[in-house]
Structure formats: structure tokens, C-alpha cells
Length: 273
Image (cartoon, rainbow, N blue to C red; front, side):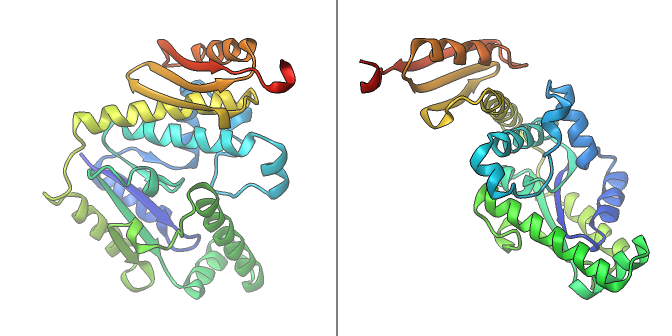
């Protein structure tokens, strides 16, 4: 089995490489559409997935809406959920960061020079050079902004990857072959049962957080932990008993939660004395 994350820039050939790798290793390919489908199966609503991409939310959206955090938590939840199968090829969405602690995952960066990528986009989408440049730079800005926003990390940091392939030099086929051979190495171990269980618990934790955020609850006062399968432990405090009960009732509705444990304290604010 192989669990592979592939991060790529527009025009680098990353999607073509990912398809070749998935086909050769007989693995499921999790691109944007496949991840959205998986999230819907987990109980998400279609309207909640409009932001399930790698774009940093605008300042206005960050200040006035809980949506950015909802999107981020849903994205993390679905990445952990598909990873609990222990195999697959996941495209982007911060998967190289989320799965970094799992030694069974192989993290790949596919890159190429801007000029090479521009030529590819001009050919693929029949655009003039100026339009292709704008499209690529917009995509690069959004993807880099997403990782800075979500994890305060530089997307190009080599420490995030196990393998970096340069398609301008290697070509699509050779790059794909290199990844396939790396995934088959004895050093790339299959995910242990413990790792798979951890991914499942992390997936449910992020799903609970996303659900609470959708209800505009103050998550700065609360923390969520899934200590064992199906168990959601909520810690923190609220100012009203009604808020505490609302929180617990909401968590009970989350698909996959079979038990809710509360360590929430009610601390009346001075204004409510």
C-alpha cells in the first residue's frame, strides 16, 4: 500500500503525473472533486464546500465570517478521512502538512520554471502569453497564501517534502516513474493500525470543529479532542448554561460521534452578575 501526497503548481504537469502514479499503483486519486464527494458522504452540505480549495480567504471574509475556519476544518477532516484507508494519492489541500507526522506517507513536490509552465498553459488552454502569465501568477499567489493562512508555512519549503521532481528537466513520464519507484521502496512502510486510527480520530475532531464553527460558537473558549473512536471530549468554558447545552447538543449531531463527554465550566461574566 502507498499513501502519497502531491503538491504542484499550475502548468507543472502535476495532475498528469498524479493520474499516472495512481493508475500504476492501483490507487484512488483524490483531487478537488473526489475530496468534495468524500466530504458529502461524511455529512457535509454542498454549500459548505464552496470554499474547499486552496485559496486564502479575503480579509473581509476572515473578519466577518466563520466560513474560513469551517472550510479549513472540513478540508482537514476529509484529508484525514481518506488517509485512514492507508493508501491513495492526495492532491494538495495541505495534505503534505497534515500527514507529515505519519511516516507511512510519501510527500512529493512537482515543480518547474515559470516560463515552462506558461508555455504549457498557453498550449493547453489556447491562451496568449499575457493571459497565461496572469492565470499562473494568480494560482501561485492563492496556493501560497492558503498555506501561509492555514499553517503559517512556506509552500516551497523543502522540509515539507520527501521527494521533489522537476518536470521541465525530467518530463512527465520520467517524473511519474520516479515517484512510483520511490513509493515501492521498502523504506516506505505501510501505515500501521495505530496511524490509521489516529487519522480517523483527527478526522472526526476537525468535523466537530467545523460543525461548531457553522453555528457561530466561540471556539476560542472551547477545545475539542477525540480520545477514542466516536468519543468527542469538549473542554473549556461558557458564560451561560444554555450555551453549554447548545454546544453539547450540536456535537451530538455530528456524523461519527457516538458519545459526547463534557468538561465545560459555566463561568458567569461580571456583566451577568
